Amino acid sequence: MRRRRVLVIPLLLLVCAACARDADTPPADEAASPSASGSVTISADEAGAAALSWQRPRVALAEDEEEVVQARARAAEALDTGDLYEGEDAAIPLYLALVERDPDDRDARRGLDTARTRLFALGDEALAGSGDDPDALRNAHRVAAVARDVWPGDEHTQAYLQRLDRADRLWELNRTAEADLAQDRLGESGEGALPKLREALELAPGQPRAMQNLAAVESALIRRAETAAVNGDFDSAEQWLGHAGLLRPDMETVPDARERISRMRTLRISRLRDEGVAALAGDDGIAQARARLAELLRIAEPGDPAAVDLRERIDLAVHYGLFRPGQVFTDALGSGGRGPRMVVVPHGAFTMGAPEGEPGSSDAERPQRNVRFERGFAMAVTEVTVGDYRRFVNATGYQTRSARRGFSMVYDERSGNFIRRSNVDWRHDHLGGAATDNAPVLHVSAVDATAYADWLSEQGGQRYRLPSEAEFEYALRAGTETAFAWGDAGDIPEGVANLTGGEDRSPSGRHWSNAFRGYGDGYWGPAPAASFAANRWGVHDLAGNVSEWVADCWHENYRRAPTDATPWVNPGCRTHVIRGGSWASAPEQARSAWRAPAQRDTTNARLGFRVVREL
Image 1 (cartoon, rainbow, N blue to C red):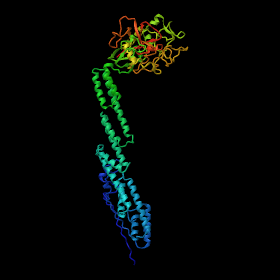
Image 2 (cartoon, one colour):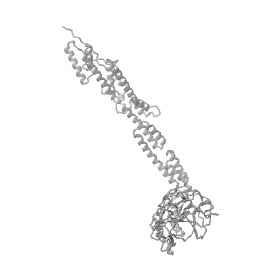
Image 3 (cartoon, rainbow, N blue to C red):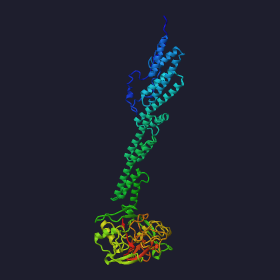
Image 4 (cartoon, one colour):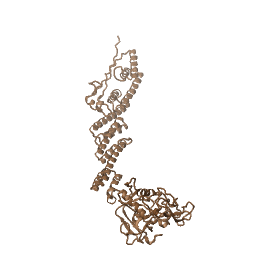
């Protein structure tokens, strides 16, 4: 009887930390420590604690060919089903037994090569999922154990083991980073989760688990920033956001958080500003407002508008009360409605009058004198309009000078002169027709203008009056020192004011014999109030449109004039000063220093007025 030859292949043995327990039950410490991905937290050493050696399953092959054919078939079937190494019917143990029986068995060698290729593919698949799956990492180590045993010197084995080492390192970096995160050791200053995650992402750019942990660090930094902002420490909040912004610069998370914190800052700043402004109206208001400003400056960005505004209000409270330069406001009237729009003119100083040699000037505009405004004042943005004056007349029944005497001076288109016309008063325009409400009021005397200002004072509870000469010229110049508010006469800007322009034409085709050459403004007569741009201080039509009454009595020059900006008034004077050019004035009358006398009862189609309000 022929003796059967039996080949014995050692049984697969996976020596690992999980061998002594159920494969589906994680260790106690693993079950208690979830990772950022929700998977079990294990160390790379635990995952590879298959310090994995492999003992081949015992495969017994008889020497007869029939059993060899059957073994080859079982190996091919196992290869097809992916049963590569576990058990005596797995492909690799069977092919190894066949090759060992017959080293020249080409079919067995081809099958073993195919099994090796599929083993590494299986390993790479496990490695691909090993970032957050401990079972996948264990499977990758099992593949390594087989490869070490069967193909220890193979270049494919060495390459695979290098990939496995990287997966182990990634696992360990993520695991320890998660432990740091749990203890709030974020590592923004060098110790903690961040350095580990950066190393992980250098090894595997975009690795999902590391990216998820990085997002967790970012969220923790944002929480720190928001906590700091709630406590009013916006500098620290910005520092935390700065750290967070370096982590995932392509994401909108940090910009969104910065916007939320910016809104918190804005609301807090706004509240402090409002509290500071409100404090200015009370006792010891400036000190309280400064305390609010100090807190505001601590949290505001440099140049924050609210801080600038509150600082200006505090700095200028002595000069302007609760107002600021350039502020436009109206006062409520006791009879209902609002008063004229007023703009706050800044306090300061200027040189009043014309210098020697200024073309078109006269000695009445000299000697020049320095005038200082220790306190600001508010000036009407426009001339008083027909609508403004109508409210006054309707409320009081006041009769103007022109209404009482029954005439005023109007422009006559046929002759091109100014003539007296009956039944013309404040309700009429420069031609004697009905005026629109937005036109500057005409045909009013200095007495009529003062009556309107006194009524405003009674209605608004504030002091309204005609401007002084100094206030008018100061506002007209608006910081300029040239003969004209816009500069030189020959450089008149387009549309600067309603003046006598060389391009202007009356309805019948008349033109001015003395005019600004090359200039046209489209009006022959007064324009509606504010038809032209305001000057740099927000006041319209001081240099043109209509000339205006001021409070001063006429004096032949400025000798012995007041040293401040108050009106120069002599009791009982009947001649007042008019200021500012009009739609029909010669060019030299549009100069900033121009002044002229007029009887206080004068009314005509070129003369109106505006008011100022004391602050």
